[in-house]
Structures are given as C-alpha cells and as structure tokens.
Image (tube, rainbow, N blue to C red; front, side, top):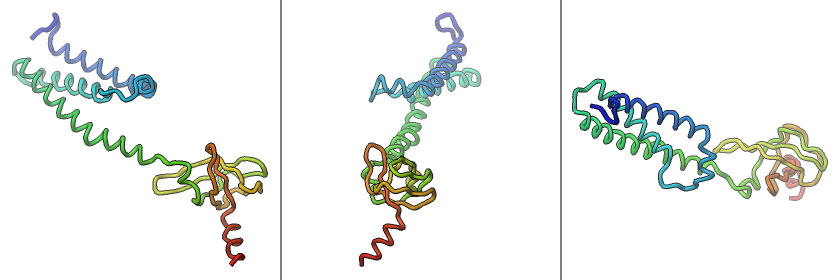
Length: 181
C-alpha cells in the first residue's frame, strides 16, 4: 500500500526515525521545555513513546505479516496505546512519586547528627554530611558557637538558615549534658 506516494513501510520507518530523534532531543532539552511549558496535559515522554511503539510495530508487522495495511495500522495503534498505558502506570507514575519522596525540608535536618567532611574554621564555613534512609545529604556548615570543628567530627545540627547548617560538636554536647545532671 502507498500513502502520499511512499510505501507504507517507508512511512513507518520515517516515523520511527523522527520519534527516535525527538526522544533524544527531549532527553537533552527536556528540563528546558518543562520550564517553558509547566504542567502540560500531554507529556512529551508519552507522545514520543506512543509514536515509537506505533511506528516500530507497524514496520515490523508490515514486514512479517500479510494482512491489509489498514488492519496492521489498527493493530499497531491498539498495541501502542496498551504499551504506553503500561509504561505510564508502572514506570512513569511510580518514578514521579519516588522523586517527590526524596525531597526534604531544611527544618527536618534540625536535631540530626552529621559528620564533618570539610573542617569548619572559626567564623568560617565547612561541610557536613548527613546520612539517612533516603540517602546522603551534604550541606555547607558553620559552627553555632564560632569555634573550630575538625574533620571527621560528629556534629549536632542546631539550625539551618539559607542552606547553611549551624552545628555544634556532638561529643561536647553529650559531655556538657552529662555534667549538668
């Protein structure tokens, strides 16, 4: 069968190449496009997946089956809809909710224990790492009492302001707390 003067297999192949290039461009520039078009109804990921599945299955069925081209198009269309639905339900939706669960607020860091990975000088900044179930968080840190804190020291996070954790040495807190009883 021919469409627009081209063999239908050629059209499926061209569609596959175009959707593959579109997918590659979306991978490279997707964040930029999401910044321009936030919360769009049709996800580019689903559109490119649908076109890829439709084109690939149409091309393969045209090569392997001897059915009429219109029947092959309908079968490819239904198959692409099913595959895109499965992709969305079992991959994209769980990934989007998993990404949200990794987010933390600065207030949640207060009271946690971290370890100094870049020593904190007097009136200066260093870096601490906080380990948890969701992963490891590295934050800029400053001493709460303007005292130096050496590398590999355990610290208690007292406050977090503007992305900087204000910390005290954890062992000193335990000793001071023990002496006050």
